[in-house]
Image (tube, rainbow, N blue to C red; front, side, top):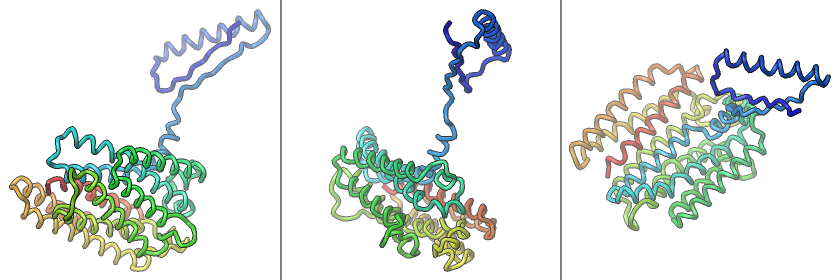
Length: 346
């Protein structure tokens, strides 16, 4: 007699009455089979359930807020550099750069998690490496696969600027995170800040701008200089602020961050001042924009930015890791907004 096949599909909604009838039919079949043969029927169970927990762990491993930052930066630089290019060609340029940029971002943040596992057990226990959901081998496998995809796709573009940007980003990520002799620069505040500045402020913007530019550039355009200047300030803020919610774990493992050296209050005040400076500079720059529409957008957005920076800063509890982390994520939102505004510089 053929075995019973039970298929469990948890995301399909079946009415209770149908479930009851099916269970009754199966029970009747089993009873008849026992009476005739004296044995229980073989039951084959096939589960089509999705491992949502594994998907969640993978998403957390990618650090979505950094992926979003990479996506917005690539799109923004492409639109700024290729503002006079046909829209179809712009999509082609984005197609070349976006995928390798995202996968390289995943490789770099993944590498940091592999070597920060013990620190993250204190600071970020929700990350899959720290929680034990992913082993070190799994993390390194994901990093290797992401790196391979990034360079393979980048090579297909035959763009020297794109490949160079990916390579420099990876090298700086290795210098920052890998715990080997002469490496692990995150242990030294100035070197750590330098890595973040070189990637977030210079390499990403210049590299993707050159990749998207329709012709070779001999002189850096003013719009790109403004982008680099503003994002240098933001990169300094992120380099300092990212460790403020994690001071306890960093102190335990001897990581002398700027927050530990300056103190939370001083470091926080410095970051707020720099954000205020960046927003004010953006508003002033808006007065020199080429059109009334662009000026209105830039000035209004940056004035609102100043208001939000200060009002939210007054509400932060410097003794609360959660409160500091909330403000840190607010900084990333300002970071994204800047990229939405940069194309108005074209």
